[in-house]
Length: 627
Picture 1 (cartoon, rainbow, N blue to C red):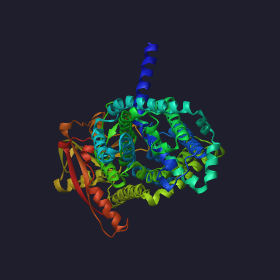
Picture 2: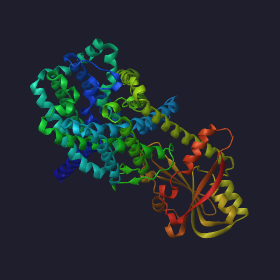
Picture 3: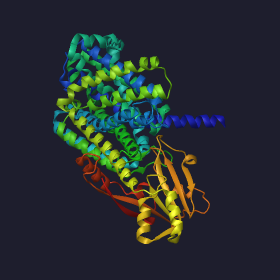
Picture 4: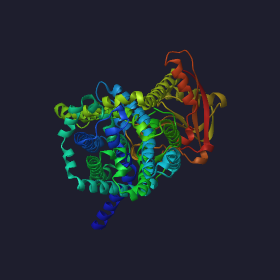
């Protein structure tokens, strides 16, 4: 029995690791297509260095130690420890620091800004990855030059059209393809390394230091392109909840890291022998007969590379909606046994539109590289700062230990951020602008929701006072249960007051239901419900959810065993307050932000669908609110 259990667990870990190869490591796994080329001779940051031994070894050393320090040490070994009930991503990280120290509010805002930046820069990932792979057609034959853009757009459309099938299904198909991809990366690199083993000198970090010293500001700005080798770090962390820490770490150390290092070293060995290969060192590693099949495999790999960003965006969106930083969006669970697998249609199509616009606007992977990395470097800086706070307050690390670990990591992040700043004029402003727009939406929605709550509370009646007054003038009572959803516990929902005012009647049993999102990823069902009973058939119920839980209110209420209450669908009606927002000159936000909030509020998703309520038994009751 024990052996069977061990075998089953081993198979489970292997399957999860294979799935992680197909979802989590796609972005970072396709960087060899363009990273070394852009670092030495690309348009990224407008820098160029001579293709000679010192520069090739220096840039390679920078790339290898970036992988080791930023991805291996920072993300895989440290940041992934900062999970929130198994969920990762900067928004989950920000929720861990709430209430930790004097500046927790500022840290939450930093986390929101980092999340918005991740959306902005992440839109470039599918576009640059697919373009870089399809550009392999130009190596096969120049006659394919005009086909690159339309082929890339067709591939992107196909990728986003299959997202509704879910991460689990996609991972099962993509995982084996990426396993082949990483095997090819290692094989191509190893062949070239054997031909020129002197390239192994790049493993010495002194070559990285000498390169920057010898090339001055130009050498420093090359970091803006070297950063392309680690752009998948944040997506890796955001996707942690899809597969778990163990499979991701196993995949990184056993497959991904060795394959990447060998391939980068192989490209360097090729350039030491043939400096002219800088035109496209990845594809020129392969013999001529292999260029077309390698282009096909690279295209498949870059399609998969986009998956890390897409699934990460879905995860971040669910967290933002549940934490009340975004209006309700239609969300679908795509796995019966893994609640981390979700699909958000509106985000999916928004990303597709952005990718197509970027492909049409920039036209090549080199041009897009000039815009890539600016925003995500700032996100990485913010992540390091937030994890420092988690280490101090949650892991109970001492100040000296925390500074010793995080100061070098922050220095590396800041160096990359400053170097990437040179890209802003040549396209880096695009993800920054998108990030700022996202941050504006997050903060406007959250502030607007708070103001609406304050306006409603002005005329709120406590439950105790209302029930006491009802005894003196009882209304007509109908059989069944009336459930009134309201954001504030302890007060009567405006929907109930409106219903009583217009109909002069209530159900025999009245449940005042508050849905509360806790600062943890998931709340176990055993700790989900809290009940307070009152006279005259009134009861207050609080249902607590985590920020990654998808509420199913009808099901959760039916599982409650409360004497005298039934939530049978045929005898239960659900009442939801629908605030009608009127923008006024009352103190609050700036008028233009209030108009943005009102627009978002009008276009929020259907609450009955979002909360899992039976549509035929849900009633919306409007409430006028002056903002």
